[in-house]
Length: 314
Image 1 (cartoon, rainbow, N blue to C red):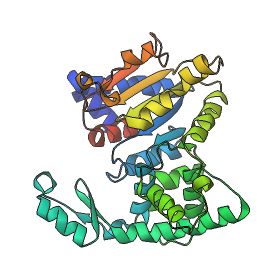
Image 2: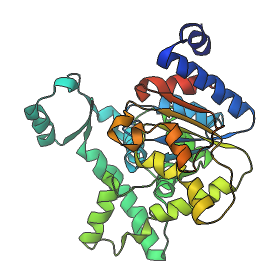
Image 3: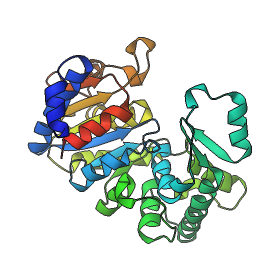
Image 4: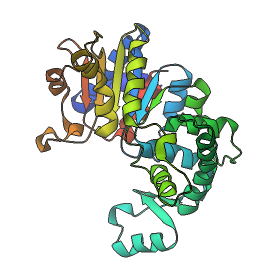
């Protein structure tokens, strides 16, 4: 029994039923010529979501990604150094002393994975070469453009299967990636540090969030196909992307269609006022979605649900 058949047979009620309806609706949307953007919050790259996201990109089921700086860089880190990662099996009960011991050994924990500091140094050195070249010629590029250059033309040795990397699939397809909040990442911090210590003259060599919004607006308008969003978690990647529509319609006076499809995977509750838990109906009041827009909320762990959705699209 395949994944689709399993879900159709066993997922009928509650969050399982919502997942099944979401998959059916998304398949219909894509089969009808829709474009899909996936937004990634949290630590999805470290959770190895690329094993299911990469095939979806290669089969042209995903047409753009909006992600945090952390998800962009952590996919890069894993590609080059995953064999050096350490599993933290007792992460739910990790003591302060055990985390201090990781720090002393140069290991940085992301839930149940410890990433060596040497990874940041290795990747950072390669990016520094690209940044210095850009500064020398007065160039400025988005974070993912530097990463694509590093993947396609760099000399770092890959230590994990490239076919399991969503970033490699995205680079091969030249997939649009929008990265608001790049500065909230290890590599973004490195860029700031290199400006502070005068290794680089300015951080302007990496284009920031306002440029990313203008680029996103261009992407949203370049195609007449209906455009949908699958929001994984919430945070800046989700709100940044979906806000392009009211920005264009209300602030720029440009007539564009609303988002044509919306799905959300989240464990957050709307009762605390955060964006991650805000239901889709709230987005109607902001002019992001319409009353008729198909909307789904799956209240579950994205590391469980997202692979099921993506694999069901094949």
